[in-house]
Structure formats: structure tokens, C-alpha cells
Amino acid sequence: MVVSIFNDVIGPVMRGPSSSHCAAALRIGRLARELMGNDFTDILVEFDRNGSLPTTHDTQGSDMGLFGGLMGWDAADALLPGSMQTLKDTGVRIAIETVDAGDPHPNTYRLTLRSDAETHTLRAISTGGGMMEVIDIDGFAVSLFGDCHETLLWSEGDTTDLVKALESEFEAYEILVHQSEKRRLIEVKAGRFIDEAITSKLPNVRSVKRLSPVLPVTSGKFTHVPFTTCEEMLAFDAGKGTPLWKLAAAYEMARGGISEAEVIAKMLEIVKIVRRSIGEGISGTVYDDRVLGHQCGKFDEMMRAGTLLDGGALNRIILYVTALMEVKSSMGVIVAAPTAGACAALPGAVVAMADSMGLGEEEMAKALLASGIIGVFIATRWTFAAEVGGCQAEGGSAASMAAAALVTLANGPLNQAVAASSMAFQSMIGLICDPIANRVEAPCLGKNVMAAANALCCANMALAGYDQVIPLDEVIETAKQVAKQMPREVRCTNLGGLSITPTAKALEEKLAAKRASSCGSGCGCG
Image (cartoon, rainbow, N blue to C red; front, side):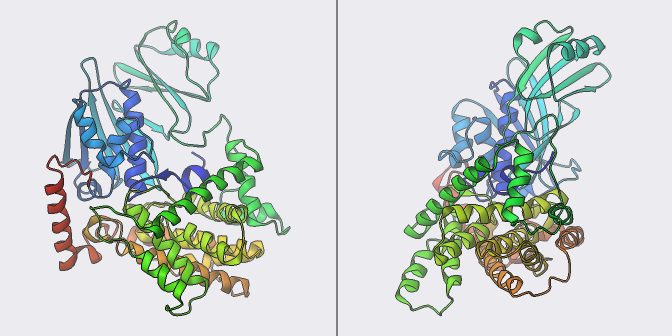
């Protein structure tokens, strides 16, 4: 699937500590719900013993996301933290098991769903930033991203006549036939579902399921974008010096089949959500199951009183970044940009700097668009998932994107925006992911602040003409290669780094006991 700024990079709008855990799991759950026709009595969830999920699924939001999706809820629903218990209250039996499956991807979900009428299996992976891919349905290897209307038809025997009938009756983007020894699964990707009037006439069809899109920007039959790497973008610009945000808009216009005005309007909505969340964070947040309480309020007071060290606009950036992180930790609404774990560095830096400069929301939106195209280059070539790449994939990406956004706020030229992005990423290669007590709060708070500060430094260095030395595409490829050399223990598994210090383990036990005493059912509602 071709990367979209609004699908893969800036978004989703969500609640929860981790987009790769919570938001992706919710999308998987929604597809699984429709696979069962919204009717199921039993759910078995299996996680591979050597993946990241056995040690993180309950505390980093996989459970609340998955079961919220199975309830049919939205990623920003206020009820999400209690979704597992709510599902149990409807009479659904839930089992979660750790197995030796040998899954190559660390974020693999294996689901078996049963009702009185049928049983289906689904295997999916969370690929980072809330994105996911369904890779198996009922033993058939598939590739579903939730970016179009999927009509699934089960058949037995030869499917030649069935496919011919489909092609004559319905215009699809793609028709795929998956087959085993006795069974056939026909997967029809399109801009709409095949209606019952057509499916009822198709030969040898035993069962039909319809899976709705779960992404905000859907794919068409022919999705072409003008570039997918930084080098290609610079060639596309051909020395004209087009502002980075305009190139980002051109990309998303091609990707989503929408106008520039629509692209900007979508980003303006995101800006408004971020600004509301910043205000909420500064005012104060309360949530029991968290490592860090409300801290940014005191920072705000001291900044206003002039009793902090003079950091200029950087102090406002620190305030906004920490406010967003506190909202995330309290299960408030945030925007994964590019992930929930790194949700604060980019938007916090952009909104704070724009406020300091007296700029408005449209300038903020354009800066975020500029950051979005940098994120496209990262997501196309690599990942935002800390489970795959460590915090360099989250915090490093956020810093790289934010640096380009800040240059854009300063009306810096294209080459300087790209240089800032490269420099910011270079200085965060190798950063591990080691959340304390399995909550995405510490050292994540400091890493978000560091990423934002790094972005500001690199933006100013680029504006002053500092040499990036290594092109951005090569930096991304280097981070990808470094990730392969990183032990799994320091890639968001709660098995290494600060997460296994005596203090961290004691805090984890304390929070686990608190959760158990406050919710005897173990629903994880906090």
C-alpha cells in the first residue's frame, strides 16, 4: 500500500499509550468483528512468546484497543480503557495465551473467533504508528491494510465461472483467488461492497463477508504518487525551490485524490485537536494507572513568573511537549505524530514555536504537512514501530520530521528543510526503547523533549547553512540497518535498558498491585 500522510504519518486521532499497540489493535479488532458479522461468543488471542506483546499487551494498550475494536468503537472513544470488561459483560468469553508460534514480526496478533454458527481465524501485524496488515484469514495468506472495501467470498471447487461472473457484474480494483486443497477464498478489493443482489447470483458461493475500510484515506484502483524518496522529491522539484509543504500537499493530493484545500483542511483539524490537548494537559490531568502525575502545570507557572533559566522559545516547547505527553498518559485524546509514544515532540514543537512567532493555525498546518512528507520517506523505506527499530524509529523520526517543520515555519528554503531533517535524525540513530514499568511515560517524556530540542537546534543550524553531510535517504537506510543490529530486549519489550533497573521493577510491581486491587476483574481499565 502506498503511504499516506494522514494514514501512516500524522494520525490516528486516538487514546492510549501506544499507537502500534492500541490504535493498530483497534483496527485489527474492527476487521475481525466484521469478519464474524458482528456476532461472536468466544475469542482466543495468541501472542508469540518471542514477540513484544506477551510482556506489553496489557499495559501498553493492546488489550483495550483490540477489544474496543471488537466492540466496534472508535480509537478516540472515551470508553476504551474498559473495553475488555465491557466485552465480557456482553457474555463473550475471552482467552489470552502465549504460544511458540515463531512469528517473524514482533507485533503479531493471532485471533480465533467463534459463534454458534461459524469459526474464523485471523492473523495480523501492527507495523507502527497505528498501521496494521492482516496477513492471514482462515489459513489463506492475504494482505489487507483496511484501505478499501473488501468483499470476501468462500467457495468450494473451481472458481473460474465465479470470477468470470464477478468481472462481468462488478467493477473491482482487484480480484484475488486464494486456494487450498478443497476451499477457495475470493478477495475483492473495491471502492464499494458487492451488494447482495450480485452475490446471490454468483455460482458456488458458500459464505460472504464485507470488511469496511478502517483508514481515513482510502486507496483507488490506480494510486500513483509523484515521489517516494527525498531524492525523487528533489528531482521532481527540479531546482524550483518549491516549499516543502506544497510538495507534501502535491503528494497527498495524488495519494488520496483530493484537492490542496482539502489537504490543508484535514491538517487544520489535526492542529485544532492538538491545541485542545495542549490546553487540557497544562490545566491538569488525572489517571490512576500511570508513572508520572501532572507536572507541566508547575513548569507553566515558573515560566510565566520568569523563574526558569532563560530558554526562549525552547521553554514553551518543553511546556507543550510535556503537556501532550501527560494527556496521552491519562488516556486523553492525542494525535499519533508519527506514533503515540512520540506524539508530543513534533506537534508540541510546531505549535509552541508558531505561538512564539505569532503565527496562526494555517501556518501550523503547513508546517505539519512539511513534516508529513519527511514521515512518508521514513514509512515507505522503514517503520515507526519501536518494536522493530527501537526509539530511533519513533523519537528519531519525530525529531527529523519536526526539524523540517520548524524550518518551514521560518520560511526556510526546501534544501534547508531537508538538511535539518537529516541532521536531526543522524543524532538519534541507535536510540533504544525501554519504557519504565511498561508504561510509555518515562524515559519517553524526556526523549520527546530531547527530540523537540534536537529539532530546534538542527532547524537553526540548517537555516544558518550548516552541512548535513549525509543525505536523508541514506540516514533512514542507516537507521534501518542499525535496528537489525539492536537486541530485541531494547526494542520495546520491557526486557532491557531502564525498564529492568531495580527501581523500575519495583514500580512495575507496585502499579500491578494497584491495578489488581482497583479492578479485580483484570480488565485493565485503570
